Image 1 (cartoon, rainbow, N blue to C red):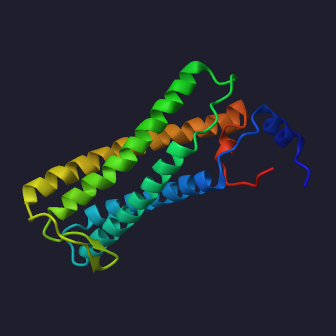
Image 2 (cartoon, one colour):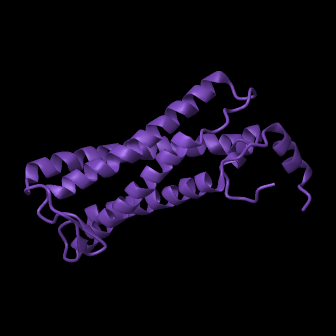
Length: 190
């Protein structure tokens, strides 16, 4: 298949792309983070209503799945370093992108841990799609609430960083047209 002229030009500017595994982990985690955030907002809106426990259990279950994907993603990233951004990207943008991505990784590790610890100290405990997980903590409402507060606050920091990450990607796609966005896009490999 022949690439359109613009695609050929972009490929020649920076032909390196993330591996299929990295792309899969990136977009799967992105979708799961959006899903669990939506579930979290819904569960908090109906927290005291009948049936809300199912939303809490779903949120915890998806959170545990996310935690396992985060472990896989961190391990993959540590063993598969990306090619640095090209010289056409100003140094301040390279530093901002690196700091943003680093903080995204830190938050993707800390947020599920804070949620899990908080849930472990709650009376409900942690269930994985209906299956109870080992209880290692005695219920402590105040301690659970402290961890839930940390979990919630960090989610909003994550939302802000994801917005910055998305805006940066869209800038490269729509304004700079420099192939940086295509490095992580789902599309075909040339």
